[in-house]
Length: 428
Image 1 (cartoon, rainbow, N blue to C red):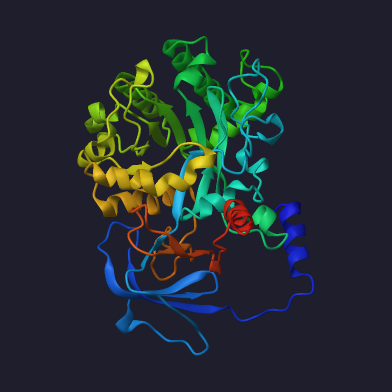
Image 2 (image 1 turned 60 degrees about the vertical axis):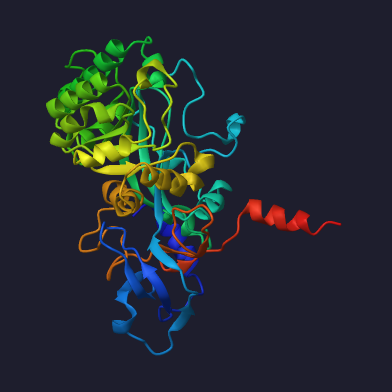
């Protein structure tokens, strides 16, 4: 445990006395577990402390003495909290203000290989963007660095309200969620502006890191060939080469996707594709490689020459081929729109239960903490209590969250935006 976390925990415990965990029962709802299974009507959820102890038909629900009963109106739906991926949430406040951007270096001449850049070391749990995102039903996120060819390491964070000193560091649940590589226009521009130079540089970095991993002593005494990668970057690349940390590669064009699949196989990477706007064209190859794909369903325009094959039903076609999906939206300021993206994937043919799983259980299982014996981010007994109770179908835009629970703690249904609205609504 780090000194910072130890200090925060000690501060939060000062003067505190052990208390029995609170028990809450959410009744009269439709239960959607988020694991691809069918919904359960007339269900109840029992939350004790930070865990779910029961989730199923109301007829079989326990009724612990002293439990707080939350009786819901007809039509309420419970789902796991949504998990947003691929944006620098907590690393940026105002895009046009350099002092609020911690997701990438401001030095245009900086090295394009930034594997040692770690989102967890810059994450701000007090960001004003977090309550706004949370009101979209998002309870966790993969805070992701940007820039360069290899952007750095993301962090899996929960978006609960900061209430105690321990929350300032305890919100980071996996400090090494994934290593991120950009083979889109930004990453290519950082490597002389062509895909061949970007791919060759990527291979060179992996080869250097592989050599370093077996020859550390020789490296320390300068007994290896010259490398264009710093020692810290080489160290941070070791878990990726060992398959312990996923490698998320942003790539769009079908032919380039095949090239990335070949590199991942060569170096034994735990690959996740991101973007993959032309993924539908090589869906069978992706499925055969058992590689998940992060898709933004509303990306359908040929915004660059590498995305000429973009189409709305990309997610549906990938799913039909047997590809595991993670659905995403873009930008730290727009993560609240994640359910709208998922709803549009359903509109273009993706089964609703698959869409829900693609924004809950699947991203949590891929990027979240490795907790043995605990169901990964689903509404089941033993799972961590991260859930949202909605007024109706979560993929309908008229639906709103009635209750948001993170780690068993009910969250406020307010943000800076709602507070400003309420303040100025009262003016004459």
